[in-house]
Amino acid sequence: MKTSINFKAVKPDSEAHNFRRKTFDYIRKELTSKNEYWQVDKISDRIQKIEAYCKEKSGRKLQCNAMPVREAVVVIKEGTTLKDLHDLARKLEDELNIRIFQIAIHKDEGHWDKETKDWKPNLHAHLVADWQDQRTGKTLKHQSFHYSRMQDIASECLGMERGTAGSVGRLEAMEFKIKKKEEEYKVLEQKIKTMKEDLDSGRFKDLIIREPDFLGFKRIKVEKTIANYEKAFKVYNAILIKNKNELDSKEKMIAELQTKVQDLKKEVLQLKNKNSVLLTDSNIFAMEKKKYQNSVVNALEKSIHAERLLNPNVNRMDQQILLNEMNNICKEVAMKNNIPFSAFQEIFQAPELAKGLFALLSIGNGNSPEPEEIPVQKKKKKRVRR
Figure 1 (tube, rainbow, N blue to C red):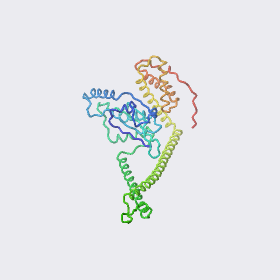
Figure 2 (figure 1 turned 90 degrees about the horizontal axis):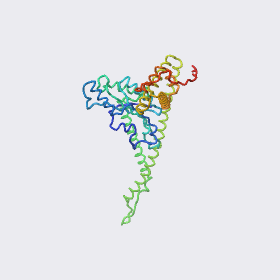
Figure 3 (figure 1 turned 180 degrees about the vertical axis):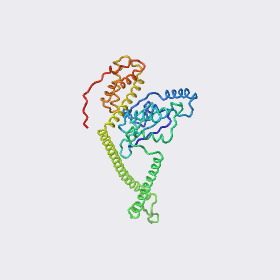
Figure 4 (figure 1 turned 45 degrees about the horizontal axis):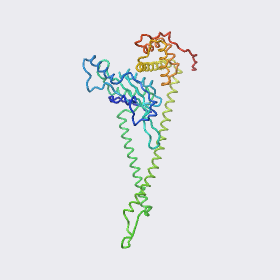
C-alpha cells in the first residue's frame, strides 16, 4: 500500500472538517468514533502568533499573500496510530523545520463500490503545520528535492510504500486512461461485429412487421419494425453489460487479493530480516531500543501537551492527582498505539526522563515530584532467548 503527503494552504473550514464540528453527507457517522484527534493550538491562534513573531523578528508585517499555515492529507493504512503520525511530525520538524500542531485521523470517509457493493474506506490523516522560519520570521522556503524528501519521510515513518513521483504518476495516469479507452473501443468493436453477424444470420428477420396495404401488397411497417428491434437490442445489450460487469468485478477482486498477498510477503520478509539483525547484533538492538524509547517519549510529550490544553484547571499541586493523571495518560497512549506498558515502566525508571515528563505535566505549578517519589510497579524480567 502506497502513501503520499502533499501540503497546501489551509482552508477556512479545515478545523470544522478535520475535527468533525459539522455534519457532512459524505461520511459514515457510525464510523466517526474511530477517528482520532490531537492539537496544540487553534489555527486562528497560531496565525496570530506567527504574525506577532514575524513583526518581532523582521520588523515587518507578514505579507498578505503568505501561506504561514498549511495542511497536508496523508494516506495511511488501517494500523496507523497517532504515535506513527507524531513520529512523522517530529521528523518533518527535524529535517525540514515544518512544525505540526494539529493531527486528525479520519476513518469514516470512503465510498460504496458500485459493482461489489463493498465499502471502500478512504483512510487518511490531516496534518496542519506552522510554515514559519524561526530564524527569519518569514515563511519557509523549500526546493523540489525537499518535497521529494517529504514523501520519503512519510514512507519511512508510516511503514508504507513510497508514492510515485508527481510527473511519473501523471504519465502513468494518462497511459492508464489511454489503455482504458482502447479497451472500451475494442469491446464496442466486438459488440458491433457480433450484432452484424446476428443480423446477417437472419436471426432477427421475425422482428420485421409486414402488413398488407390497401392494394393487398404486404409492406414493411417501419415504425413497428424499429420498435421491435429497439426492444430486442435493449435486452441483448443488458445481457452483454451484465456479463461484462461480472467478469470485470471478479478480475478486480483477484487483482486486489494478489496485491495484498505480495504486500504481506514483503512485510513478512522485512520483519524476518529485521529480527535476524536484532538478534545477532547487540549494537543495532541497543540503537533500535533507544529509537523506540524516544518514539514513546515523544508520544507521551504530545499527549501531555494535549491533556494540559484540554484540562487547564486541574489541581496539579496535589501529588496524587498528578500521579493519577500521568498514569491515565500512559494507559491511553499505550492502548491507542499498541505499546506494552513495560515500555513506560522502563522510561519512568530513568530519573531524568521521569522528572522531565512530570515537569512538563505540572509546568506552572512548581510541584513536579522527584524521581524517587514516582511509584514504579516492578515486574519480573523475562529472559529473551537469542
